[in-house]
Length: 211
Image (cartoon, rainbow, N blue to C red; front, side, top):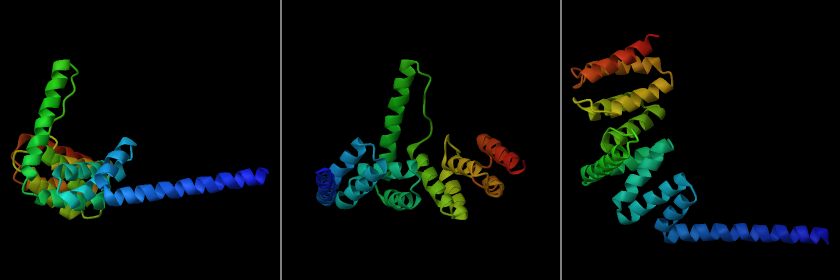
């Protein structure tokens, strides 16, 4: 009798797993948008990002593409980040998306200031994406390409939390002194070389490389 109960339980469990698998498979095929929301609700961010990208491929929804890029950057899913960011960078509305996200950030900072929290976030959304792209290239072993990309996107103004800073911090965390030394030299020859913040940052990189 005990064996029968155990066997019945196992069969029931197996059937439940099979049905759940079929449900997820059918739902994913029929409605990636629903699966994006469902997986996000369950805290399955990586899966939610994949479904968001599927939504973009099917419908061209740029908000879903931006979300998919953010998830890939956060989870350091480097191949996915490169693929998704390449798609986002090519969109005609890329600047508009960045402006919208920057507006959201300004509202967030204003709310934090009004609440007296002392919390604020600086840096543009475009630099956040460029930094994520450069770091993904670096982790994939494409350091020279990452360096050129980050410096090219940083520009002469050397704005706060720019792509070059993001890439350099990634290299520092990896204790990559050789890259930091080379990156400092590249920054010294870049359009930002006369910027005071850039000069200070170059000195920090050189000090780290020479430790």
